[in-house]
Length: 156
Image 1 (cartoon, rainbow, N blue to C red):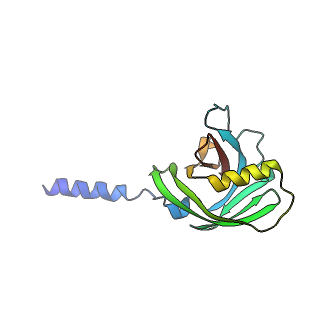
Image 2: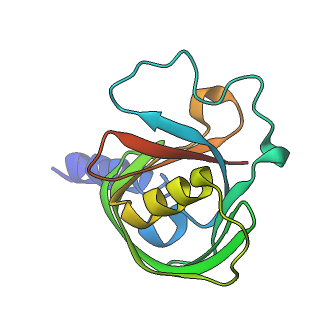
Image 3: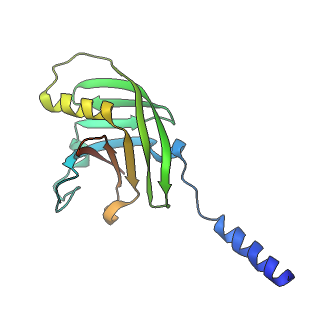
């Protein structure tokens, strides 16, 4: 009886070694825009070899568990967000995303592509993060809403 209890205790301790990813930390950091994709299309690659991380004109920086700043080309924004976890298996985390408040801090010329990215960011209702996706050295963040398209960002 004591051997079985001892074995269960040891197995329980080893289960605790796995680092836990929580909602407060999963998005924190700077994410750079890769592209807008559709759930209805199969793609050969998402972060293709010609992607230049440093040339991304759309960036979102999740500063902490509730605040973010963003550069949407020349537009500068800040906002408040909320997330809830649905799935966490260590390498993939997904959940709900709510963009509570976004304020545009300046009013430069806005292209139709800028407007599209801004609106999709405002309408996002879920997120999906893959850590070290496809062994390319990036974490991938997908922000999607109830339509077929989603925004894809990466973080080093």
